[in-house]
Length: 276
Image (cartoon, rainbow, N blue to C red; front, side, top):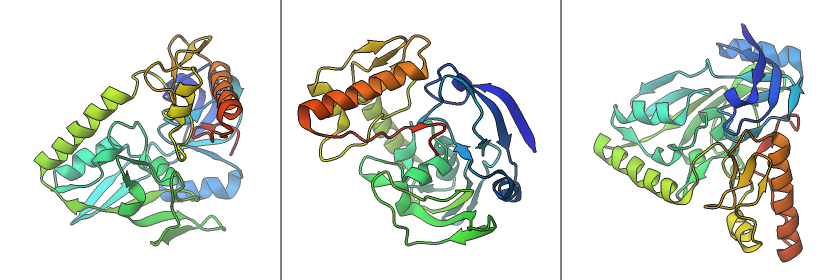
């Protein structure tokens, strides 16, 4: 099994920062995943790194990456996907076979495993609707399969180890799939900032987190190399070699100001490595 050493945060997360992960395991098979969890104890699974913040300095937490588990196999309208496959790969391969429905996932640099863990969604859709089977580990760290129904909710997906997912997709022409990609992409470009970030910092509730952050006047607030986006208040951008400390300062400031002004406790959507 391959092991990476002294891996900088900027190479494995979309925000970046000054952290360095001492060791990352890269299993190539489901059985290797099972072996890791039988022997290692608490482990952080690193997906695409799009909602992960790595603390500054050297991080000794046990980390495993599923980047080698990235197969996409199609049988009729069932698509078997390794947890480490990126959404863009899945959409573009399935559309060649006349399948679609998950175009809403495009534009998010996340892996399928991470999306299933959080029941990722956008534009009124969620990935949980399309899941036909999940390959995971039982309490004894043995491979097992889980089938619907799942108790998923808003930003609440599968809580176990996602190794492989089977998606049941709908028939769709390639032209229709591309049209949806363009439509969703245009909206994101208009409403979401470009640049390095963790994506949405906080979960939406009755109102969007960005609504509250805008109302307390924090757009454009900067700490070190990080800035609360001037376009969308629920994004913190790494604009000039920002650190995790810079990010957390702004996130905590937003939480405190929103609670003080509106009595609303914003709930974080990002994962801080070390808080398994």
